[in-house]
Length: 222
Image 1: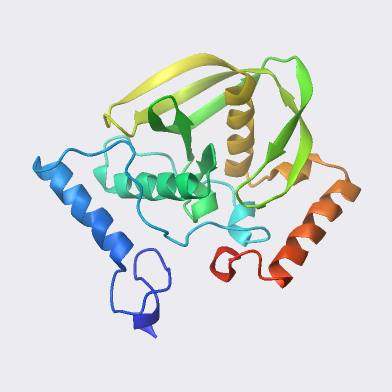
Image 2: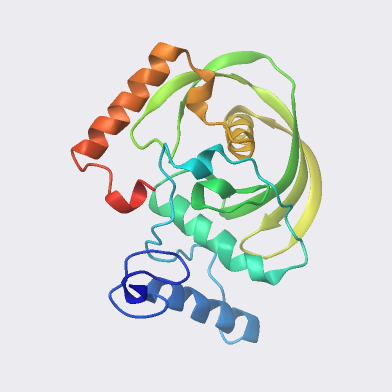
């Protein structure tokens, strides 16, 4: 029934049309653009039920569309993904983890969050095993071989100031790891794809066990 789910985010909703989370988000955007309210960089929409959990097919999709720098309609999408990331206490989230097809991810930075779009990444080394997890694999971690330094070029959108700019930088440490992890997502690859078969089977089995015990919310499973 159309009244059981939000028409925008797909989340459970006992009313008709858009859920309260999406209504609040839309109201905030209208106030921001009309100049009647100051948009908070810490703003998060309430639970939007959009996170894709393995083995959701969206996690295997390669990003097809580019970020459109001049289109304001995408702002609500970025803020929605930012809310999902913050609610799950993540450090970054890729477009296809919330069912989008663009080549972008949202990541935490000092003082707020930003969108990184149309990124190209060059691995500079050295390489080491790093502890890694993923919002789409709740509670699961493994060591993944990553480059400690990368060169990242693309477009950056500050979700506080809403200013976008092209950039080219050397990222190190966790930022370098985030760039590789999120770029993998945009290429339809998850962190377990870097692991051996035994480790992949262990993580898949543990995630299946958590779902069977209802320790992963049903609307998160995809």
